[in-house]
Image 1 (cartoon, helix red, strand yellow):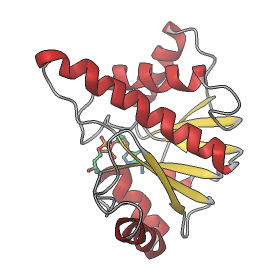
Image 2 (image 1 turned 60 degrees about the horizontal axis):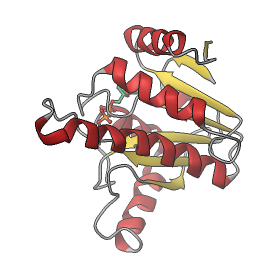
Image 3 (image 1 turned 180 degrees about the horizontal axis):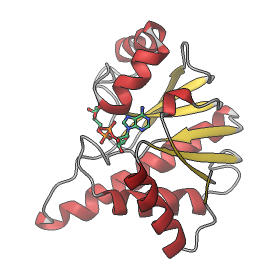
Image 4 (image 1 turned 30 degrees about the vertical axis):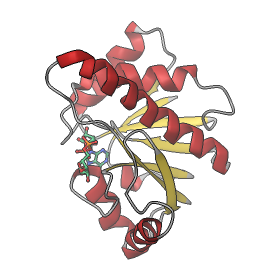
Length: 183
Ligand code: APR
């Protein structure tokens, strides 16, 4: 497991995970970056999914693959993280945290099922969706550390967009005794 600070669209891996929204038709953040760098083929594939297998969009916590278009990857794996609820009204925080775990688990599991040897993963939900970065780091690394060979590719690389997010992941790896090294 690796921790890298950088732009996920520059990664040369088999699969790149996208922090999408349920509509699957693009957005800001890493979603915008992937569609911009990957080109129209990714959006066309997303539109086809909406027309066929995902008429109501991609449910939070699920993952689906498309072509990676012009990116140096074979697939983009789109997943939808939960929006941070801000309060713990009626256990909403725990319910959504389970969805955050599911989003990472679904993405890594799909990458493994596709036969990817390597996957780049962003800090899903830690941006526009407002989830506290320290908690995202704990959830993401915990899911990756618990994944066996059938649940994640041999190389899982978390690609963090800023030093502060990288530090949060390094701290979570250290505190969790998780063998993830910053490269
Ligand atoms: N490479 C790697 N990480 C990136 C990049 C990039 N090019 N751009 C942004 N990030 C980081 C953000 O800094 C944040 O740490 O990805 C993390 C996730 O942030 P968002 O992309 O905002 O994703 P999320 O918080 O899951 O919100 C999803 O935002 O972009 C829209 O369409 C998307 O509605 C959806 C929502």
